[in-house]
Image (tube, rainbow, N blue to C red; front, side, top):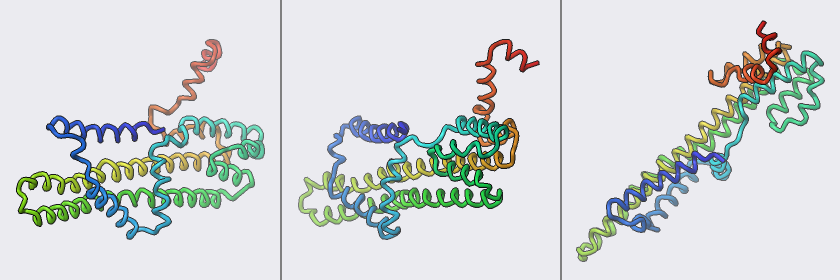
Length: 271
């Protein structure tokens, strides 16, 4: 689970409720069903007008991804490719077929099997790049809808506030209730701004970052597959793929190997 997303929601909502209490108010004062209906219902309605229903229906699944920690460990992926490169150089590409069939990631499995089948390198790269671009397009559709919702919500809040003020002005004969009615009217603006900046836009940004990370990992896999097909030395494969990683993550396998090796072997390697 991506605990940062959950913590962010809790901290954001907690800050709003806490500030309300510190100012002498009550959290119940922030609850208003008509305002919520205008803002959230209006935002969803605007999204339905703007985007095809099929894309809207895919958003809940995308939102779930914002709360889950998926994907690959970059260091493990590089290590896996170095191992496969070493095996391919010693035993040939066909030795990777059984391992390729067991790979869970569909992109990596597809690339490995196409490589083993002897697909032309340029064609193989083209096929995998098409997959990467298609993945990015699908992700853009999901977080694009959330970004649009983040733009609609504040406007819906203003509409709700205007409607509330119209209702207030139509009942000026009761001055005693005027302050409360105006406060209730502005709750719609609060809902609009709050939902845009705590829900819609942050979720869109989180999904965008996850999409960028997944694209980067697929690019690592693509280069790893092409390097193995080209018969590159395992050390070259490692150096090439580590170029995608932050400096702090590079060379872990070599350091780990030195730490795990017996003292005599370490000294011999150094010599």
